[in-house]
Length: 280
Image (tube, helix red, strand yellow):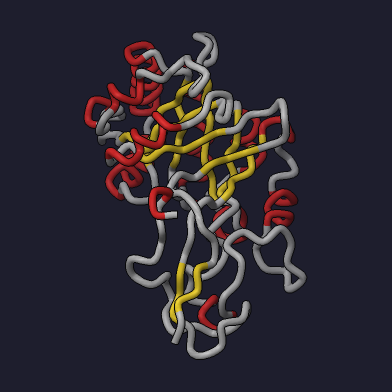
C-alpha cells in the first residue's frame, strides 16, 4: 500500500477572488506557527485576515481574551500585511460555542447581548469586524440564524465594522440540512465566505467513490463541486461571495491502485498525514 498526497500546502484556509476584490486569510491562533505565518506574510497579499477562533459563552459574550497569542497578531492590524483584521467566532472544533450559538439565536435578549459583545470586542481590540463561523445551524436554527445576524449587523454596521460569515457550501450543509437561509443570510452580511472544500474523502459515502479532489471545479457525476456551490448561492450578490480554497494536503492509504478514483482503506485521511505549511 502507498501513501498518496492529494495536495500540498499550508494549514491556513485562504479565501481568494480576482484582482481588486477581497483576499481573506484565515490564521490559526492556537499555536506559535500561526503567528510565525502572519509575521512572514508579504505585504499586499491578504486584504483581510481572520483570526481563528474565539469562543462565545452561554451568555452571548465573546471570550476574546482567551484567544492565544492575540496581542502578537494585533500588532499587524492596519498594516500592509493585514489591512483589515477580523475575529472569527466558533469553528468546527469548538463544540461548546456551536451549542451556545443555537441557544443564543433563540433568545431576543441573548441575541442583543451577543451583538453588543461583537461591537465591544471590535472597539476594545481595534478590529475591522466579526466573522461568524457557526458549523452548522440545523433546520430549527434557520430563521434564528438570520435574526442573530440582523442583531449583530444593527450594532456593527452603523459603527463602520464588518460582519461576515463562513458557511458550508456543499449540497448537504447549504441545502439538504435546511439550516441555511441562503438569501436571508446573504442579504444581511457584508461577505459570505464559502467553504468550498472538504467535498470528498471525509464522508462515509466517499469510501466507495475513492480518492477524488478536495474541491473540484466541476463534477460530471453531479457531486459537490465549486460550480455547484456557486449555483446554490446564486441569490447572494456576487460582490459578497468569497470562494474558499483548501490550502492543505491529505494523504490516504490505498488498497492497491494509486490512481484518482481508486478505493482507499480508511474513511478519514490517515493519521499524521495532513502536512502544515512549515512541512511543505
